[in-house]
Image (cartoon, rainbow, N blue to C red; front, side, top):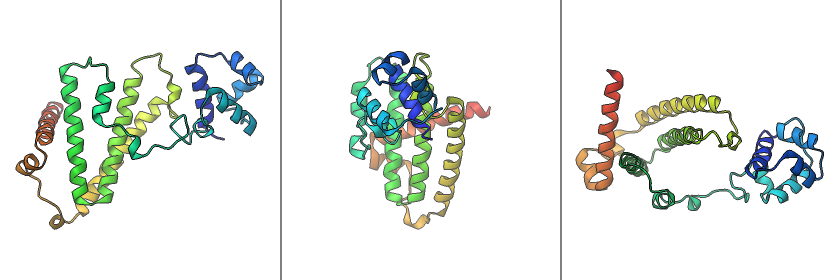
Amino acid sequence: MNNDFPRILSLLRKERKLSQKQVAHDLSVAQALLSHYENGKRECGLDFLIRAADYYSVSTDYLLGRSAVSAGTFITENDIPDAEIIQKAGSGTENISAQLSKKLIISGIEVVYSLLAKFKNSKLTASISEFLTLSVYSCFRLTYRANSKNDANIFGIKEELALRSALAGRSISEGNAIIAADETGDDSLPVITTATLEADYNRQATALLSLIKSSENQLKKINN
């Protein structure tokens, strides 16, 4: 049974603030049957899948959880907005501390990926990418839960399990990154110093070095 379909089917209805009774009527099925579909107790046929996709104006791939985009397309690198675009889409109400943290993090990640490109270590790059992906995922879930009106069905995994699993996943990715880093030959890599960072990355290096300092101050407080 497809576990994504019931979740997304229910999510679409709730996002549009429709009752099961109304949707069941519109899709010409019994309300009890629609409830079974939304709860994952019954699998629907192809006819209902197509009617539901048309009704909600989404693709069948989205309904089945194959695509994260309602149109059913699969995201490519060209679809990902630049940081500047994301900033323009914001409310502009961030405090100074939040703005600074965001700039430090974005700049720091840009430097990390630039260095990874020079290292040409695919295992290290993959491990770090997995670590960062899970970190952003966890941050978004915690932000999402701040409003109790947000529908948890946007996610396919329950929050407690997801956050625990993401923490474990980050530990695994970190371990894999350590192994990959240790396996890289020193002679093939550029030497990183404060001077080389500043020379190569200018203001991004300043942001990264500030992030390092801030992070280590925080770690010292934790250890004390």
